[in-house]
Image 1: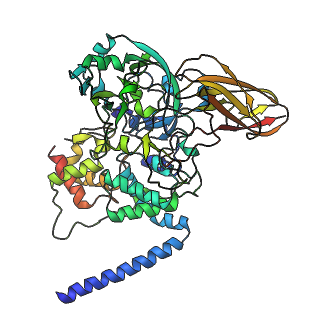
Image 2: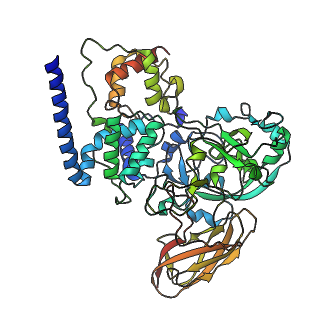
Image 3: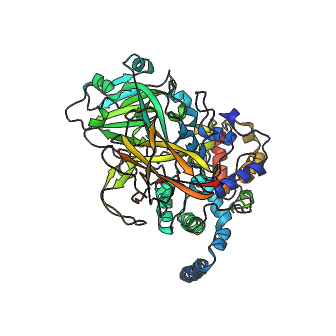
Length: 206
Length: 400
């Protein structure tokens, strides 16, 4: 046990050190290069987390120094944006690299598709097939899906999902959530497979 | 709502392209996309918003192109829209379901239906309504918030009942000092603070402060607060709560983010770009301002007599002078004030510019009110970019 924990501490130190090196190198990089490297994940987060309450056009018109981006992301987390500490750091880096005060009025869109972003988890969790938990799914739905699919999954801009036939076709349901469909963006880069299973379980209970 | 959403046949690629364009450009969204986001309804005035410049597609923030300000009244469909959370579902504010509740420090908590209000004495007031952030994009260094250019303002005829008549029916207590408003709009996520605002009792009891149910002679459109919104003539629009459902009379100013943190300006000058820790007060009255509606930015005009025209307004006193400069403010010539002269409306002005030679010229305008307040070259910087009223400027090409 002791050896193990020492090894763990050691790897944290090393990864922490590597992280520092990477961060320092990144700060010295051309800002555009930093922003391209971060873009796929950051933009997927913006689409999923920020667009629940407001469209991305509000974000891309800002030209702010890093401190104000930090304050803004922190305010949004305080208001309920579903962003982890790591995700917040990523967003601040991306936003302050791309939408800083010296950035031109028009920042061209990046040449990639959000749907191509790597899924967070491609394999089901070890230890057997995923079992969705409906009680968790309600909360995950409220923070990720409700803005378009309405309270109680009763529909809004997006279709009503309560009692929707797609729920019986799990492969189609998963494909739609992971890869997107029509106007719906892909959620594979944002939701874990467990979270998708939880949402599915909750929708079935509606 | 569903039938207004993007058509089934819309390819995913085109949607992604739009999303990416949105991420990169903050473009004017296709109207179909807007309908899906703006909360569709059947009210007159909300169907055609394609003439607005969209700053945020959801919830909708859209400004009026300044060429519209050639007319004295701004048409409902071309009036700027500012949303904190977007309109409530139409059924929540339908005539059948909607009620106005008045409570707090009153003798009788009261409820009013649309019918009750329409049976009371009605008044019509022409008033400018302007977002406090109008012109935010001109502050340097730049500040966070919707990057409004010049068009988050409009002038309309508002018809409704006096707020004081409503308060009188409920009976305001002696301890009352502030009147708080809340609308039926709600954030997507419950942890986001509600848009709750208050105004001092004195402003609430002013005979020109009204609860409006009509805009330019038509039923108030959903995007503008149907069925009832507050109009505080002379004051900025954050006091003009839309979709009004709750009035609470109280001893204190409203608590919460939108009164205690947002919509405030520092009481002392602050270093541009700093995050000052100084005392602040809520934004209330508008500041003296004029804008050029014609010619347009970048327009080519023929040498000779060029008609320069626009509008000017103030918050506390009437506009008495508008001046125009063609030489970056070296010399100024008075414009002619024309058209209607009403206390809270804007004043139209005209200036005939004799453009003798070809070339590129910048036209500036500057208004002065009866108190002697003069529109400055640039407004004092403040962290939220409120109350911009710097000289308006339009650059044109004169063809010889």
